[in-house]
Amino acid sequence: MFRPIQSPHTAVTLVGAGEATAALLNSALRHAPCLVAADGGARLALEAGHEPHRVVGDFDSSADLEIEAARRLHRPDQNFTDFEKCLAATEAPLFLGVGFLGGRIDHQLAAFSALLKEPRPVVLLSSRELAFIAPPALSLSLPPGSPISLYPLLPATLTTEGLRYPLDAAAVAPDGLTSTSNHVERGPVRIVTDRHAVLVTLPLAALEAVLAALAG
Image (tube, rainbow, N blue to C red):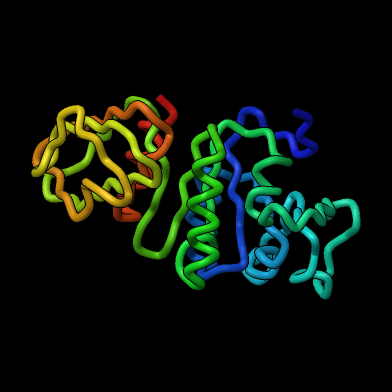
């Protein structure tokens, strides 16, 4: 697949038009310095003093912004969200997403759906939490007592170690067993799943540990 935005060796920050702050965006950019805006997300980027490398979407939310034509990547297909269009247009090893959690529930659910379809690691950030889809095997260095939730967006088999309520090859599903409101008992936390389906949520303070684990 040809991806017109190339950042093959550097993580990319995607900014959307949902709930976010300049401080959160700045925090993401320290880890993923290439900035790509999903349409109206360009507004937050500019207000925070950052000019996006590219702006992707149908431009129904950013037409009034002063962004040079060379930075705009027009993708009018209404069968995909602007978040999905950014992912499809960008070559990168990892993504941080700001402005895709919180706000409207339908937008947040659409973002989770996009994560299910994206094989590369994508970590969504809010002012208090982060969320990502667990890879087949993950080891996280987290302090005891840290809250963690594992929510299956699709049926899967899940094994966990180091949690207060561990699972052993358990069948999990959105309409069945989940592992929400759990806590770290001891580190490292190990998560093994047979399917790209389990949404992991953690405090925002765990970002560096998550990035280290996903990079490994």
